[in-house]
Image (cartoon, rainbow, N blue to C red; front, side, top):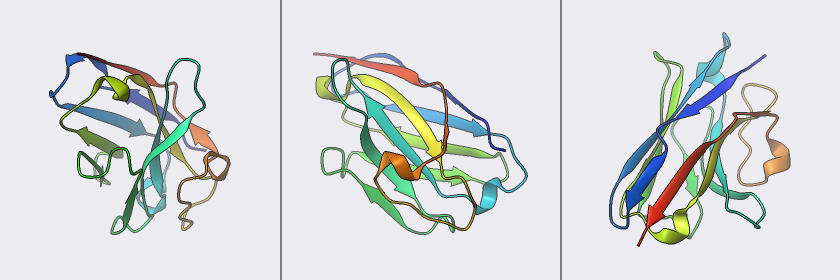
Length: 126
């Protein structure tokens, strides 16, 4: 069983940076792939970034590539999303997610992820 709790969202101006955190419970966190998704009002949930279970390979949505970095601290059971050069179109609720089993690295499909946090709101003003 994995529980995920996001934090770090807020109201920022365009061009600012934010670091989102996702604290995970569970004994085998170090062996889980992790991902971030986001959902803007009136839109479907979309993939942002994913990190494989080994922590060595990452994937990013084209809309955030070059501005966002996903990372993981196994000692703290925490996954991060560093977001730079934020744009108003980045405004959304951001969710972290994990697959049902360790040693499995989904990529960008939300149905491949089983555990979800409650989300943290990011609002970017122009």
